[in-house]
Image (cartoon, rainbow, N blue to C red):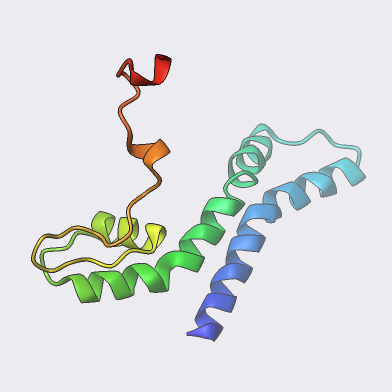
Length: 113
C-alpha cells in the first residue's frame, strides 16, 4: 500500500512537471515553446494539488465505500472520507457534518440583520 502510494505520488509529480521541463528545454535551446506544450503545462501544473488530494484520500474513500455497503455510491464515500464522518447504516447520515458556513442557505435575510 505504501509503495503504491509512493509510486502514485511520483507519477503525479512527473506528470505535473514534465511539460514545464520540456518547455525549459525549449527555452535553453532558444526555441519558442510549441503551443501544445504550453497548453499542457498550463493545464497540468495547477492540477498537482488535486492529484495529491486524490492519492491521499483514496484509501479513506475505499474504506468508507466498503463500510457503507452495496448501496453507497463513490460520491457518498468520497464525501464521508473528505469530511471525516462515519455513516449510520440506518439513516445514511454522517456523524460529522460539513461546517455550517458551507451548508447554510445564503438566500435568507437572517444574515443581513
